[in-house]
Image (cartoon, rainbow, N blue to C red):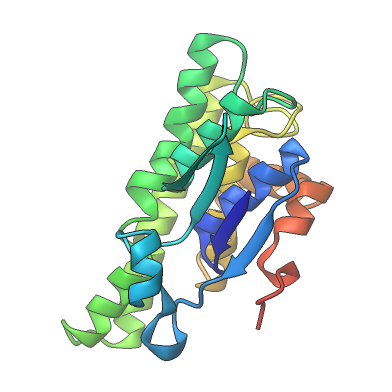
Length: 218
């Protein structure tokens, strides 16, 4: 198994957490998203992943090797092929709730705040850094506030998002909180999410996956 990753990429961070929770060994290759105009835009990397995004994950299954993209697809693949330490709840309704929680991050918060969108705001539309950061904080704070209320409504939160075992939703929450903290978002209205985040950051699988602990960390 090989993961093409960038230490600060939240999508890559999700996959690193999942691999660690599964106890899987993998090789990691750094793709720097800023240096040299963005190594993800090189012809060599686009031949591997035409989306020109990280993560990209080289998986082998029954003698066949494939390059998987999109963090959620990669994590679901890992959960299907490596059933030890399942990441999704056993109950079908709870599984759907955990997926919905993760999708709210992966499809609602992250896409409008990721690197290429922020660069477009400043480089093409000419917004100032202050305006860009205001944009980021607005969508991140709004989205996370919704998830705080979602967890309270579902009533399944324990030490982690869905009980007392870390899983699918936590793989998405922790990288998003890390990004929010980088942009100085106001997280004071998120006591449940922040306590879960703290619990996760005391777990070895999350510690090992942290951006600061990656070989390409700057």
